[in-house]
Amino acid sequence: MSQFRKILEEREKAQAQRVVAERAAATESAAAEKAFLASFEDAINRIARPLFEEFVQEVGASNYAAHVLADQDAYGNPTFKVSFLPVAHTPFPPNSLQGASFVLKGVVSDQKVEHAMYLGQRSGRQGDTKRSYGLASINRDVLSRELAELLTTALDAQEGR
Image (cartoon, rainbow, N blue to C red):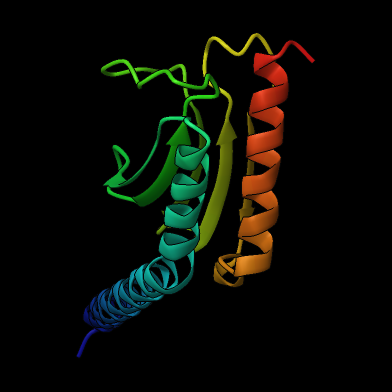
C-alpha cells in the first residue's frame, strides 16, 4: 500500500468514527430530552396543576376571572400557565393581554424550567420577570411563593401602588 493510500484510509476511518460519535451523541441527547419532558410533565401533573387549580378556585371565589392553560411555545417547549384578571367582576376579554400570568416553561434544549411572571400590558408597571432553574424548582413551596407574589404584585399594580 502506498503512503498516499494509507493517509486516505486513515482519514476515511477517522471520518467514520466521527460520524458514529455524532450519532451516539444525538441519540444520547434525544434520550435526555425525552427524559426531561417526561419529568417536566410529571412535575406539572403532580405539583403545579393542583396548585394552579387551587389558585384559580380561590381567586374565582373572590370574583376574579382566572384560568389554567397547558400549551407549547413556538419551539415546541411545553408551557403551563395560570392567568387571572386583577379586576373583580370582570371576565377575560377574548385574546386579552390584560391579565396577570405565571408561566412554567420546560426549555428542552437547556433542560431547564423557566418561571415567568407577566403583569399584562395594561398594568402600567414594569414587573415581568423570568428566571431559569432545574426541575426541582417545580415544588409546592416555590410555586406557592411565586403565585402569592403574582397575586400581590398584580393587585398592587391594578390599585396603582
